[in-house]
Length: 316
Image 1 (cartoon, rainbow, N blue to C red):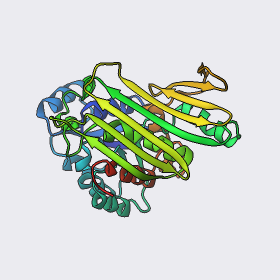
Image 2: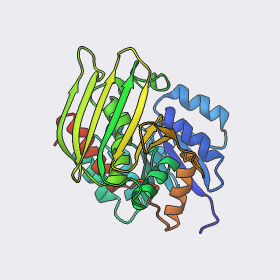
Image 3: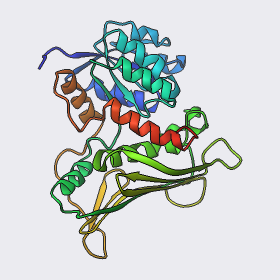
Image 4: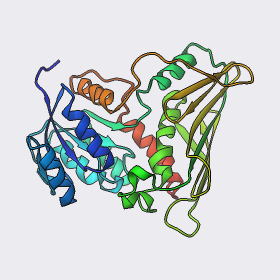
């Protein structure tokens, strides 16, 4: 393992880019040297707070800098235009999800990634709940997998922490199917195998934001059903349910895990590290050291997820 810090550049300083900046600045494996965002006010504010980082309003200033790795945290339609030149410049790339919104962009990114360390930041990739369910499946404790249910609801979309990211509400590259369902599509792919699409439906009603989403998919011969909605009363809901003949699991709100062997959900006491941006940055550093981990999503998994997600938007 190299003892030199990984020189990291960050492109995009919205909610996730800012989070990665703050985490990486405290991570012993990284030295954040460059960062960029198109918003000059954001750049000025962060430059004052972190004078040791070279900030710019030009993404090229990061892509052309002498850095070892680039974290791309911009809207998904811009990913390929940043990821490909970064990879072609010999840099490793850690990218926000979704990988892209077009098959052509994803293909270009996949081609450029050959021989380079790359990963996509899916929040469930290294969660201890994910590892617990994965082990239960491997040990045969679930029995026959009968189905998966994914339930999402947002009384307001975009969510509060994304309110400044106007693209998140738009049809072109936003919506909760891309922003949230993609995480659970990745989780299902990770635990049960690639998804094939049977039927999808997406309704926008009168506004740009998605109002309802329905999808029927298959992981092998296991049915996977998504029901999602936004803009109606009721609590925000993130639920992923695995139904097994012996044991079922409910993952709620990203980290709360429950198990059922009878008629009731019982909380699961989970041990070990929770999983976070910090731990995924650690896994990415290990990847750059030549030690890949299944707890870090690669571009191939992200491309499979993209295919499923974009099927809701008419791409097959």
